[in-house]
Image 1 (cartoon, rainbow, N blue to C red):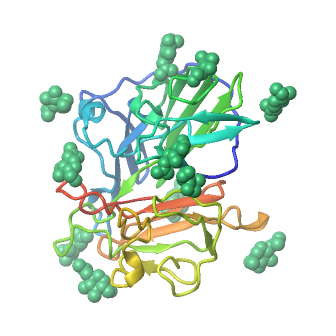
Image 2: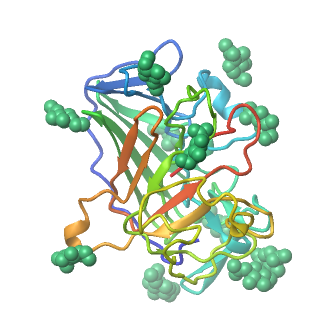
Image 3: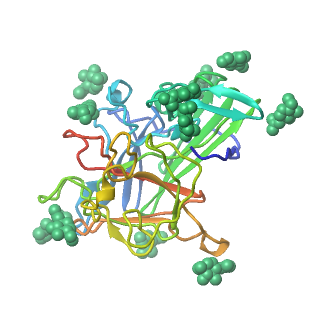
Length: 326
Ligand SMILES: *[C@@H]1O[C@H](CO)[C@@H](O)[C@H](O)[C@H]1NC(C)=O
Ligand SMILES: *[C@@H]1O[C@H](CO)[C@@H](O)[C@H](O)[C@H]1NC(C)=O
Ligand SMILES: *[C@@H]1O[C@H](CO)[C@@H](O)[C@H](O)[C@H]1NC(C)=O
Ligand SMILES: *[C@@H]1O[C@H](CO)[C@@H](O)[C@H](O)[C@H]1NC(C)=O
Ligand SMILES: *[C@@H]1O[C@H](CO)[C@@H](O)[C@H](O)[C@H]1NC(C)=O
Ligand SMILES: *[C@@H]1O[C@H](CO)[C@@H](O)[C@H](O)[C@H]1NC(C)=O
Ligand SMILES: *[C@@H]1O[C@H](CO)[C@@H](O)[C@H](O)[C@H]1NC(C)=O
Ligand SMILES: *[C@@H]1O[C@H](CO)[C@@H](O)[C@H](O)[C@H]1NC(C)=O
Ligand SMILES: *[C@@H]1O[C@H](CO)[C@@H](O)[C@H](O)[C@H]1NC(C)=O
Ligand SMILES: *[C@@H]1O[C@H](CO)[C@@H](O)[C@H](O)[C@H]1NC(C)=O
Ligand SMILES: *[C@@H]1O[C@H](CO)[C@@H](O)[C@H](O)[C@H]1NC(C)=O
């Protein structure tokens, strides 16, 4: 877990404006030049993201179910496209201390807590408070203790929007009456080939760049943060800063197995890199992912100080042989 707690500022409540209902498939569709994106209130999810490949063929590059009503009953619940909360990612040993008080959270990931437990924000149906042709705003009222060990009322707001070739997300949460852990992210799984590459359904030939990430968060065998922030040596398995590299470039490196947790044998990537930037670099992308096959590439812009890359070691099966989340 990140040791620092931080509260994102709340947006003013938006005034209800033009209302567009979801389609017959239960999804809200936003469109702008070069991009179409679909969303559902469950987990404030993005379910589809359609962009053109090098031939002009539309490709859906984000994993999601066609059937919107399957999300809440998916037994694997892999948080496809979700917004986990109120505290995303891991809390070691399902416990933390704020201001001298120790709290115990739900152990849903070995002895740790992942994404706030099984009633976290990615397990809830959010309210839709505003929809236009290019944006949708979801809100959540998260009562005190509705996740074990998470005290105090929190009001969360997620606005997804599209513009020229761009998907943007604004995440905010305010702790109303009690100090509490807050950390939010989006959780999309990508396949920039959209399973159309006859040579592979895997993402290991995608090329990743993390130009500002020469440090990462140290982890213990259970993938929990230790508090150490080691340097990433150039040429090492976790080096995506010295130059862009294919996600599978280090697959034969002995360090591949266990790189994201030796206890479980987690192989490949499920790690957090620190983004170290000065003020003049804030407008530059912190990550770039591309596929030579489709020619599809994205740049990730954020004001946040870290990025998680997950290459989905645990996901076997036809649904997710080949995905990565950032
Ligand atoms: C969608 O998923 C729900 C929940 O599993 C199921 O009841 C329904 O039959 C599914 N619909 C289709 C068209 O697959
Ligand atoms: C979890 O608890 C065990 C046993 O008390 C301890 O050895 C370990 O350091 C703790 N893990 C973290 C990340 O604090
Ligand atoms: C699990 O976490 C609890 C604290 O919440 C700790 O007392 C216990 O030692 C931990 N167990 C292991 C195996 O780390
Ligand atoms: C910590 O607790 C003390 C005593 O209860 C209180 O005065 C203080 O405001 C608290 N600090 C924070 C940051 O909540
Ligand atoms: C949605 O809004 C209703 C009415 O204000 C409220 O009772 C409910 O708690 C809200 N649901 C969520 C997930 O915030
Ligand atoms: C939250 O639960 C704790 C026990 O886990 C209890 O002491 C506290 O009063 C509860 N707070 C609220 C606001 O329900
Ligand atoms: C849309 O984005 C493309 C690059 O992706 C750029 O060339 C073009 O000028 C942009 N159009 C508008 C209207 O902003
Ligand atoms: C992936 O890239 C490697 C190195 O460039 C190449 O040897 C291999 O053939 C590629 N695999 C596929 C399935 O495209
Ligand atoms: C920011 O860092 C870059 C690369 O290290 C450097 O070239 C640039 O001068 C720095 N800008 C400021 C304002 O410090
Ligand atoms: C683009 O079209 C060329 C020529 O038809 C074809 O060989 C190639 O596989 C297509 N690429 C994609 C990503 O569909
Ligand atoms: C759930 O996970 C198992 C094991 O990885 C996989 O075989 C199955 O296809 C997955 N089912 C769904 C609905 O994701």
